[in-house]
Structures are given as C-alpha cells and as structure tokens.
Length: 270
Image (cartoon, rainbow, N blue to C red; front, side, top):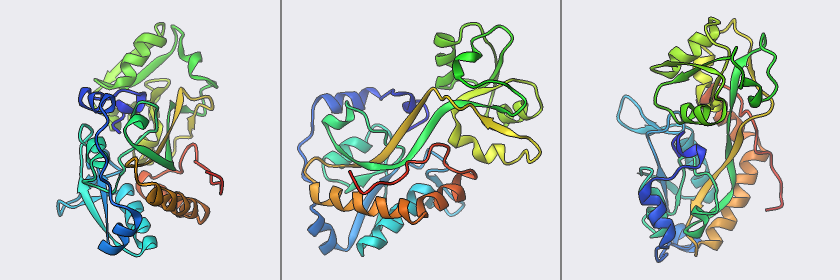
C-alpha cells in the first residue's frame, strides 16, 4: 500500500474489484508444496518495503520476509512484481499465492481476499523532537505550530481538514522535510513515520520523538485468496514464529533503520 493508501484510500480499480469478487482458483497448500515454489506479489514502488537495486532486482523488507517464509515452508520463493491496482486481482484470481506491499486489512478488501495475522504495522502519526511538548496530534491545531510536510502527499490534505489553525511549510521531498525539523525550521511532521527512519538516522545529534498518541495505526498482513484456508493457516503459524524469534524485528531494523514504532507483538491465538 502506498502512503496515500495508508490513509484508507483505494484506487478506483481496486474499489471496483472489491465490489465484484473474482472467482478464486488459488493453489492449495499441497499444490504449493508439490510445485516447490511460493509465488509472492511485491510492489517495488514502496521503499524500503521493496525497491529495485542497482542490478534491477527487487529487494527490501518484503522480499526478505517472503524468502524466509518460503524457506520455512521448504520451497523457493518467486517474487512477482505487482502494482497497487492489480495486486488484489492477482491474488484473488490465483496468479500469485499471496501478496505483500503494505496490505492493510480493511473490510472492503476483505470482501475479495483474506488476510493473515499482521506481518507489520505502520504508524500514521507525528514526528517531532524531544524539545517539543506535544503528546497528541490534536495539539498541533494551533496558530503557533509550523508543520513541515512533503508537497503533494496525503497528509497535507489531512492537515487541511483536521488542523486548520496550523501553519504548513511544503518541501519537495522527505530528506528536506526531515532536515528542516532537525534544524528547527519546523515543529513537527505528520506522515507514516516508519518510512522516514533512514532520513532520521542522518541526523545523529537530534533527539527525535514520535508523539505517543498517533493519528492511526495500520496493520499490514499477507493477502491470500478466499479458498486458501490451508495456506493461510500455515502462514499464521509461520508469521507467529517470525515474530516470536525476533526475525521480523531484525529485518525491519535492517531496512527501515529504526525499530518498528508500534510492534505487532505475537500471540498463539489467531
């Protein structure tokens, strides 16, 4: 899911797909095992979840996680490039066995596909510094607050609708926005904070703070086809093991540069 989709927005194509469920012809767990390959849809436009490296190969958290899951299953992983509009139709129609790419669980999507237990979370919240007193995003709705935001992103519209008194300074990219906060040229930024970890790490002397009351927390899972109960049940156990053994957290820190802000935790109960 793109950061815009992290706010609950779906493309028109995806909405249409969710209103008209596709016939599911997904492979069973036994068929996946017999084939020796697990087909995983990954969106390379969502770094560091996934991106193209210098060899034009898709790498990232999603790839590492899917590779480890396939290893646990005893099969090879086949990474299939997907985009936001086609990822749900691909998994619903059986072109892939499961899909990643910040697949936030929501009731609309659940009409078409099923979801496993969460693989990770994304916190839509407030990034600021320890020098600022904010404890809730609602405290930013004041004339003296200067929010530094990236031009054209969904949080800008959120601020226009919900924080009308705050001043907004628009910059062209995330490195510039985070740098402005680090230099004290703004008070805070609202966004999916997990995705700016690498930019935060470039300012070693800054004591960053994520405001304790976020706007929302999104739970992202594997998306699987409706008739893939056996595969989904196995994936739930495998994801639990990944969380329990600390492998999810280690992969997250490797790719995002920070700990998961709101860890999913783990439980044997699904």
